Amino acid sequence: MVTEPLLEGALQAFREQGLPESAVDVAWVPGSFELPLVARRLAASGGYHGVVCLGAVIEGDTTHFEHVSREAASGIAAAAQETGVPIMFGVLTTHTLEQAMERAGGKRGNEGHKAALGVLEMASLLDGLP
Image (tube, rainbow, N blue to C red; front, side):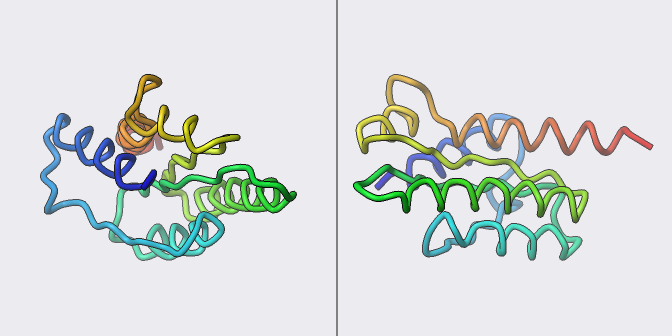
């Protein structure tokens, strides 16, 4: 429900920058907690200039939200640092489903679009660095 518009936003950003959809691979994971492992595997494969992680963690009645959000963020950051491949954190962490939808193409924009532009910018920057 939330991830589909995030993905569409990312794909739209890639199209706008001239990247054909055939150059983009999509891997679905069961949840945001699993994103770091897949991101690390893709980045370490040598087949990608960047990885965009999209997802949503919506607060519930327990502290599960905090644990999943923290581990997803730190795992994604660690994967980027370990592989040297830019990995963008496009995971929404919100209090409500409404807030998530506002950031997944609603009145607050599309974080998937922003993450895709960010990974392209980082890949370009890293390509130019020694």
